[in-house]
Length: 274
Image (cartoon, rainbow, N blue to C red; front, side, top):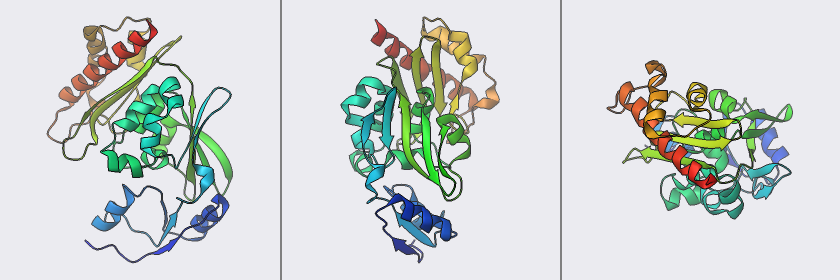
């Protein structure tokens, strides 16, 4: 299909972008464009105005903070996947970024866009939940942060944009695993884990209706170790309705797949502690 008619603006400051979004009902944010432009072309999305954020420099960059990492929303997935600070302090985030699409997608797609891609499973949200990250937002009411888990459930409020992902530094005891759809590279199931002094943090996506932290599985595996059969048993104890069948897969299969991927991720993360 041919793109429908819309207006286009390219602000250079975040305040200008927020004013445009607030003043124009139906305005959409354009960052990497990897999800929005195909949706506009296919008729799945409409827009009266595209607000292109790619020249808002304050949304770029990766930097250390007092207790972790700040990842600007316009940081590309390719930058995130290979950044030394992320590889050392939040390897599950780097691995999730690396699992996205192909090099062209990773060179254009952004961290903020991947987090905000509502309606389809992407890789970064599940890793952000496992890392106990927070999503920084800017909108008409000012700046705020929400947990990555809450953001995966509710998204950004109207008129607000993602400005950064705030990730606690966790060291190398973290991992990400994924089984991808061959045609789209979106996850059939993805699992991210981070082993902390309080026990493992475990999140899955693709197999569930939205990215979820699995606290019940965490409780059953607290204290480790993480042999595959113990992890699979922890997943079998979860309600089957948690896993949403689709793309020719059953809930039983997806629950098993989530357990297998989580076992692999936990074992890799545990080896980093040895």
